[in-house]
Length: 417
Ligand code: GLU
Image (cartoon, rainbow, N blue to C red; front, side, top):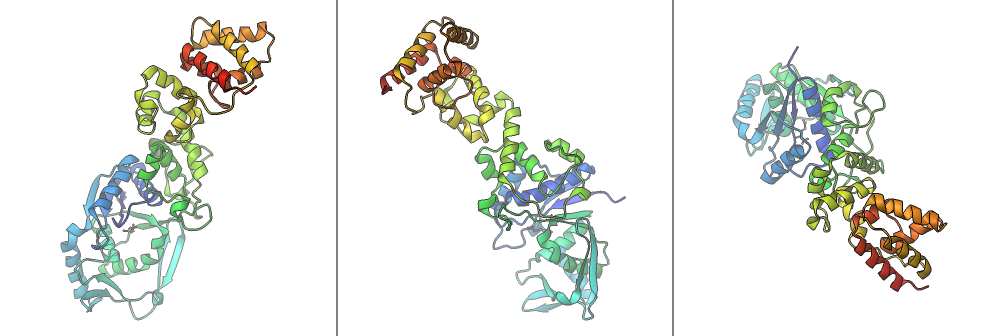
């Protein structure tokens, strides 16, 4: 059996968006699942549009998701290889020169080019729909078609896994393979990801870069899990997969023919799940870059707050939204004065200011005074925090007793009735 050798072959002409990175991920997963090699091939043959910076963006996107490559190549460093192959085609008489560029000749007599695509099964194109095409441009650089075929052969690529916008290029590639008498690799064209509007994925619908998602507070694990399920379905109805799990489970057979829809709600769902699992230490380091409150907090107070708000957050950037009540009172209007007075009295008798003792004391106070628990807690909540908080007793324990009392006093002053 031929060794599995896979390439991800981006052109560095823009920042890759997550749809492009899904292609990288599928390539990587397939390579690793088969104990094969994963190659990063930068296709910088468009000299005008390729930049160093975009190469860095590509590498950074992959690194952020832990997609590690074994080898990397830069096509602009391989011009000699393409020239050598042009010479072979010249000798075979299947190319000609026009306006400084070398063209590949499409056979005059029309026939059918077909291949057994891993996803789309039998695909056919008559050669009459294909026109002669450039393989080496007048600037001496190869075109995508030529460089990609020569490299896939030279690098002994076993499976070409790429977006299905390349399907119509495949017959050209197969004609080049035929003229060299080379064995083509397997082709696997991935259905393109659509936005929620059913159209090609746009920026507004989620076609942002990995970097952008991370800077909005998404976790790499969540993005990876989400991207893996865009067009691939695991066996059974399990949804949570680490990168390691994906490597074990991934197979090309379970890639769907239909276009997956990029559903941000689903990404948010994954992010919430992974946020709930993340360990507090790691969380703390990451949150600090998003939060204006977290920077000066001591570890103990910080981890208490994190544990209280974590389940409410969708992204890391939500921390301040839910944690702000521990730093300043929300601006809801205060409850009636007589209710605040009751709350103040209840708090004043608590000696040990910790969650357990707060709970015991306040519950006892409710019982002793035959208060309506929900209403009493709501008064406390509104006087000290806002109308929506994590469990009130635990929340009170995050603040000092004097802070709670001064907030209650303040609420009393603000109260209109
Ligand atoms: N350079 C092409 C791209 O940017 C690669 C297509 C392929 O994988 O063959 O997508």
